[in-house]
Image 1 (tube, helix red, strand yellow):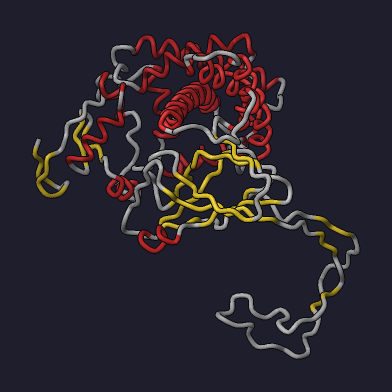
Image 2 (image 1 turned 90 degrees about the vertical axis):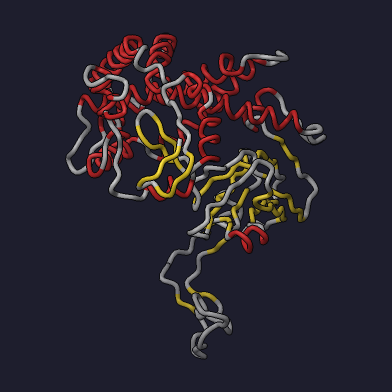
Length: 447
């Protein structure tokens, strides 16, 4: 269709039926086609921005707000359990109401809680992979992604393993609320919501009486300036954690594995040095494992593992599809590429990012676009950074009352091109510490 109004000059904009089965099956194809025609598309609910620059601009426009319950009106839902639940969720809140919920939820999602989950997640993944050992083929979502998501969310919320099947089915029913089938499947969706709400109420009542070290207890205890989450808000958050955690983790793992499978099929073969057992495969997350046993200084290029056409630059955590195993006494440093910096203003935010010898996860690159006017597109296979592997020394620090003098002394920090004015009397720097104990630290820590 051709449209000429406040959206801009006359241009051909696609119509995207966001309630259709075709859209549910492949939203990305629909978005790509619409993006090639114009910066926006029309939908049954109105205009949808489909290009990065316009989306970024609209997100920063405070005249715009969340749709909330209006998203349901288009399919004839204006009341009932689904309407109430939808309007309680974070994405239906704006302004101070949204910030209040975010502050309270943040009290429960502490670094300690996240760190505690790392070991559990690895154990769950290793156990599932061990069950697949010896199988040449499997249906990945059914065999790994779904049970992995169920077990992780179940452990996080303190759900009994015997209840996993029940809340997985209810979550799958609720997921239909985010598809084009929401209108015709309303009864099934609200049935799944009723099961999760009832289960959430049981968990809340149990944890109020007997708090444990799970997330439900932490959400109940969360407090901000005397404010706490209400019973309805707690119920909503638990159902969202069950449904959202399962749905997001399951499909993200499926998409990631599909993309990695395509990449491996395209490759001529794995590096000869790549070796892993079934348990190690989880630790290496299915990535190439580079063992660099005899390198003094070597540079590798970080290659983007996935397209980032719609990346929300200026900030992007880019994956490169590589994990390395460095020997003791070595560290790797992630540096920007001079060509990207000179031509596009793309740099590495924490340059150099440090990877120590004990790290076994995928190398991630914190990219920063310093060009405030032009978005930057990353395609899978693009060289986005370089990794320099070097020998490092372990430093042993000793606390003393004073330091020996030098020509520079304490001048120079923040100076431009020199040491600044030298005070000839400043031969030593008295420290404020009067401790005599010895402290050790390592110079190779992971950022």
